Amino acid sequence: MYGFELAAERAEPMIKAIEEFTRDNGQPPEALSALVPNYIDSLPPKLPPLEIVTDPKKLVEYGDNPWALTALVSRGLLNWDRFIYFPDQAYPEAGFGGGLERIGGWAYVHE
Image (cartoon, rainbow, N blue to C red; front, top):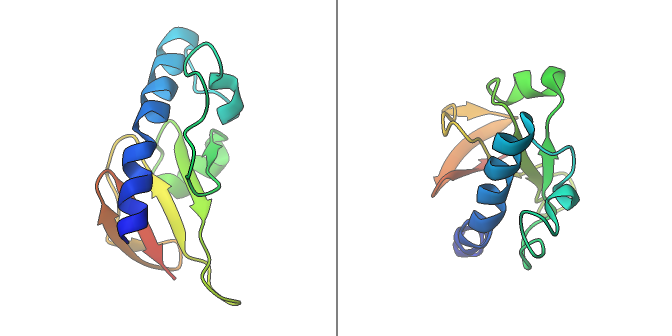
């Protein structure tokens, strides 16, 4: 879990860039690459393969947040662990097929 703590710290500039992009454009970016170079010089290195979720139909699964970050971080053949970020920080006790463990402002889903 220490590696995910570090990833959460490294992702902070990207989260701030998403928030700034959203303020300026009235909606979040559809892809993280849209943040570069106007909002952040480059996407932070050494992060799990994060994707931004902006589709309102999919955001229902993410607590109706305005956007969410998610990465599948499977460890093994039949494992669907996930690393997620909700801007409103209102994570459920369980969901996404397992229990959630808070890691700073993020959550790790143990499937």
